[in-house]
Amino acid sequence: MLYFVIADLALIDPMYQYSLEFFTRLFNRRLDASGKSEVLQDRLAILIADVTDSVYLNICRGLFEKDKLLFSFLNAASVLRRAGDVTAEEWNCYLRGSTTDFSSYTNDAPYLEEKTYHKLLALEEAHFSFKDITKSFADAGDSATWKRILSSEEPSTIPLPPLYEDRLSPF
Image 1: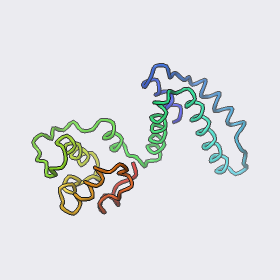
Image 2: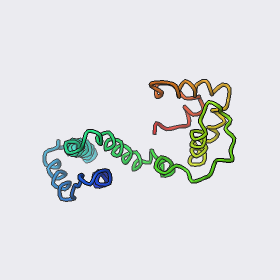
Image 3: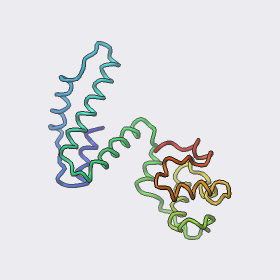
Image 4: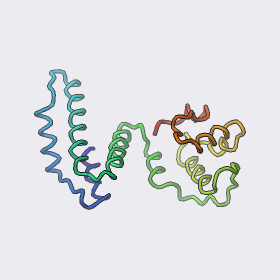
């Protein structure tokens, strides 16, 4: 999984070309240097942590500063996708958005731009966890919370309306 994230870095900048041979050498070095354990599960946990850290640090040394955060995000997303914590529908919505034409829909939340409202409709379409989110933005009780989130310097510190706080994953 780590190798494929690294291989995809070439899509960001052609300078980022890492071979399978490079990755294999790095991996084998970590097999020899990492902590040992007779218990299989412990050994696997040690290897996963050690290889992940080593690969991350080695690759970051060769990245432009502007690309390091993206590399971190791609690694985290890859791990979450593999674990099933981010579904294919969530990932596709994040990458592609919707192809549906929402121009005929009426924006019931006047404080939102049309473009933003259409993106919320796309979220409703893409994943059941966002069901009726446009109604929540239009709801008198929830709209105060959404407005605070939209105008905040640190929106992640403000709890979502209760239905979405329970329903949505951190991704």
